[in-house]
Amino acid sequence: MSKPLTIADLKKLARRRVPKMFFDYADSGAWTEGTYRANEEDFSRIKLRQRVLVDMTNRTLETTMIGEKAAMPVALAPTGMTGMQHADGEMLAAKAAEEFGVPFTLSTMSICSIEDVASVTTKPFWFQLYVMKDRGFVERLIGRAKAAKCSALVVTADLQILGQRHKDLRNGLAAPPKPTLNAALQLATRPRWCLEMLGTKRRGFGNIVGHASNVSDLSSLGAWTAEQFDPRLSWDDIRWIKDLWGGKMIIKGILDEEDARAAADTGADAIIVSNHGGRQLDGASSSISMLPRIVEAVGDRIEVHMDGGIRSGQDVLKAVALGARGTYIGRPFLYGLGAMGKEGVTTTLEIIRKELDITMALCGKRDIQHIDRNILANMPF
Ligand SMILES: Cc1cc2nc3c(=O)[nH]c(=O)nc-3n(C[C@H](O)[C@H](O)[C@H](O)COP(=O)(O)O)c2cc1C
Image (cartoon, rainbow, N blue to C red; front, side, top):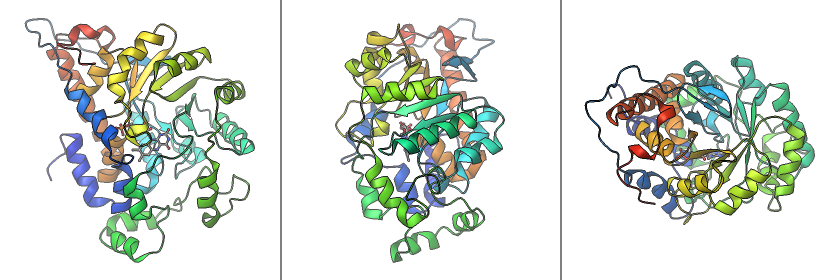
C-alpha cells in the first residue's frame, strides 16, 4: 500500500499486521455494536458552512487542555493492552505523542508500566485510573503515578462492570495469548508481530503483575482483574481519590447532564463526554450527540472534553464547534500503532492535523480558539 492518507488506510494495514484477537479487541463494541457505529455515523450528520474570500493565512491549531499546551485539541485516549497491538506499544505511542506535542494517557490496563513509559518520555503524561476493589492497590497505583510525575489523573467512571464484547469472547482474548490451536493459527500468520513480541519482555499487565496482592504471575492475574472492577463505585470514592491524588483530575465516561453536574460538583478540572468507544452500554447515545447538552449544563463550570468516533480532523473541528475544549482518539492511534509502530502513531496525528487545518481554513477560520457553532450549517442534535 502507498503512504496511508486516512485512518481507514491505517486500519486496513493494522488488520494485516496484528493477530486477529488483538485487532478485534480494538475494533469491537458491546453487543450489537450499535453505539460504536453511532459514534462515527453521527459526526457525518453535522454539516459545515463553506466560506470564501476571507484571509486564510497564518493558521494555528494550538490550544490548551486543563491548562497544558497542546499542538492541537487532540489527546491519545487510554487504551488497555496497547502493547499487544505492537511490542512496547505504550512506550512508542507516548514518545510519538510527546514529539508531536499532544497529551498521552496511559491506561491502568496497559502492558508497559507507568515506570516503563516514564523511562522513555521527558514530559509528564496522564494516567488513567480504574478504581479497583483493592483500595490498597489503588493507593499504591496513585503513589506510582505521582512518583512518575504524571500531570493529570483520568478517572474512568463508566466501567464498574465490564460490557459484553462478543468478538473478545469468541476469540478467547488474553494477554499474552492462551496456548490454544486457534491462537497458534492467528499468530502463525503474523510472523513479524511475533518476532517483535519475542524481542520484548513486556507481555503482561505491567501496572498489575507484581504490584497487586495475590498477583505474582500471569495465571493469577485473570482471576484478579475479573473480580476487581468495583460495582459499588460512588461519587464519594471520586472525592476520596481527588484528595489522595491532590493534582489535576479528569472524570471520564460522562454521558448524561445529571452526572455531568455531579462531576462538576467534585471540583474536577475536566470531564470527558464518552461512552467508552461504544464498548460498555450498547444502545447509549453517541458521544457527539450528547456533547451540546452537557456543555450547556456545565460548560461554564468545568472543561468539557469528548471522545468516541473521531476518525478525521473534520470530526475534531465539529466537536470543538460544539463546545469541546479537547478531544481524544482511541482506535485511530491503535490502528496507526498496529500498522507501523511509533511512525504509525505519528502518521495518525499528522493525518488528523492536516484534515483539521484544511477544514478550518475552508470554513473561513484561522485560529482554533475562535471556532464555535458559527461554522456549522446545521445542528442535528
Ligand atoms: C482497545 C480499547 C481499549 C480501551 N481501554 C480503555 C481503558 O483501559 N481505560 C479507559 O478508560 N478507556 C479505555 N478505552 C476507551 C477509550 O479510552 C476511548 O474512550 C475510546 O476508545 C474512544 O473512542 P474511539 O476509539 O472511537 O476513539 C478503550 C478503547 C479501546 C478501543
